[in-house]
Image (cartoon, rainbow, N blue to C red; front, side, top):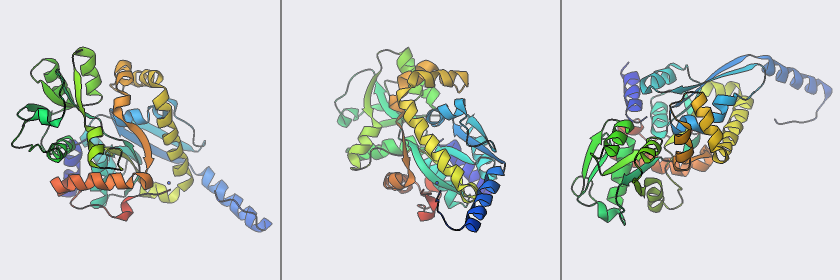
Length: 336
């Protein structure tokens, strides 16, 4: 019970055919085996938190592509972190997009999932109403951000420190509970500098026209980590049982997910329509205006691994519990 509660709290605070010709006998055996697999009915539950993770697979959510008549998939955009965590732990969800550090925590605590790909590469921006020239201009300023110890706070502290700014001495960090509260505080003028994530930022920029993006934290991360495009904030995990029993399906699903993300980059208007039709909480305007800033890009675990390891190391150094007490080993990664 303590393990389950711990994982739920972490989520609340952050939020894989070889063909050959042999004898006729072997051919018949192979055919029968394939037919047996094809005829097996499989029900699969796919889930993603609302926001950029849901947007990463919005085409699949709306169009429900076929993986064969015996494969039944349900898609769900989950707004409650507690519900998402409990359903992953119980095994109800087979495939999910989750915060990458949650994926590590689940793995380190024995929950049977592997990380197959990373897809959301940071959505954090420092915004204000006046231009600044760089990090040094933040010295002495008050910055509103998300709660202490959350991954956005750790990323911000890491980047402040990397640019010579002591986050506890040189700036005042004022913590709010969630992105919507940050947004409303900034719009109302009660904050002049804030760290606001997408998609909340798109709504802010629609309502407060003098909003200026002061620093793109993804670009700033890249400057500190040569060779890493950004930090993999959210990743796709798959239940081990599904990987072992249905490898052909996993291959098809990952290809479809990658294709859907490629589609997304060229079809913002349609993605916005899909989002509104599915009532995900993201308006068409927010999707269109914020898509480029949502940094949705498919990288399988083999390609993304270096970036994942760097990101998790930064989180681990701040607090080992953010990744489940230790850095995950090779078994964490599913490679196709």
